[in-house]
Structures are given as structure tokens and as C-alpha cells.
Image (cartoon, rainbow, N blue to C red; front, side, top):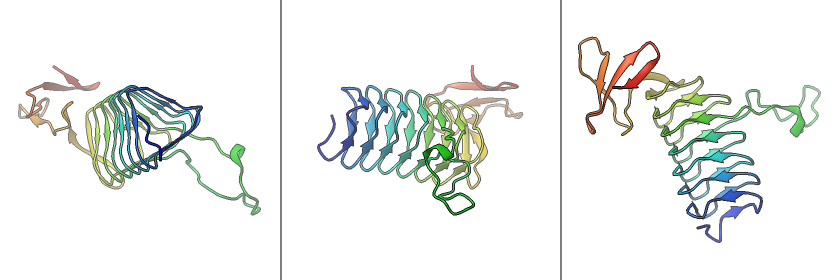
Length: 195
């Protein structure tokens, strides 16, 4: 469903089961998967891929060449940026053109959530099932299941697939449990893995 007041380029692909709401803009070459929801006033740049069952909430901005995998949540007014060295003009004062910079896209892995008004810098990868708290500024890659807060964002714990903070089961903090689902995890040299 695409509402009449949305601006969806005819060269974009929007799956039949996706929803694009009032004042949202979906640019040419964007690929919106099955079951996705693009909220009011959201912006999806050209060529951005959005995996099935993902949600881009109201007024979020997703700039090319971002990739969102399956089940990603982008909170209201969050921004996924793409320019490491933003400038409008060259040193001589001449206007920069489209060929005068190289975009670096954000990658958001399966099930991850980026909270309201967060900013993710260009080229950053957000790991599977991680959670970025509202208002955080993410400047570096985020491991799977990490709970990130602050400016710049720092890891303060781990989250399960439910999005809830994991609780330690042992004194060493090597084994963790999701209090809502009972799912268990182990902290290894390779990161957090389900048990």
C-alpha cells in the first residue's frame, strides 16, 4: 500500500505487502522488501536496499548506499549518513558536484534496531540483533547483540533477540540469559553466541 501523498519514484521497487505512508520519499532504484513499513516523512535514498519486515519510522533518513537486512528497525528521526568529509564547496569556493565525493553506506544487519534520533556515521556496520539507544551517535562498527548508548556510542551490555538487556547467569558474566524469553547466550572470543 502506497498512500497518495507519498513520493515513490517509478523506478523504485516496493513489494506489494509493504506500506509507504504520508510524505515519505522513496527514490529511484530503492528496493523495499515484503512486509516493510516506511513511516510518515521518511526518506529512502536511491539504490537503498531494505530487507523484508523492516520498519523505517517517521522522519528517519536513510542515505545511499545503505543496506538494511531483514527485520531491521530504524527509529523516528534517526539518520544513516553517507559522507565522511561533508563539504558544500571546494577550497577555491566552487560548488562541489556529485562526482566530487565518494559515499560510504551504513549496513544494518538482521534484527538490529537503531533508536529514535540516533545518528550512524558513514561506513559503519551495525551487527545482528544489536540495539542502538535513542540519541546515540554511532562512530564505529557495532558487534552483534551489543547494547550501545551515548555520544559517541559505547557498549554497556548485551541484548537478546527480544531487544531486552541480557542478565548474567554466572559470576564471570560469561553466560547470559534473556529475562523475557529465557534464551541463553555465551560470551566467547568470537562474541556473544546463542547456547
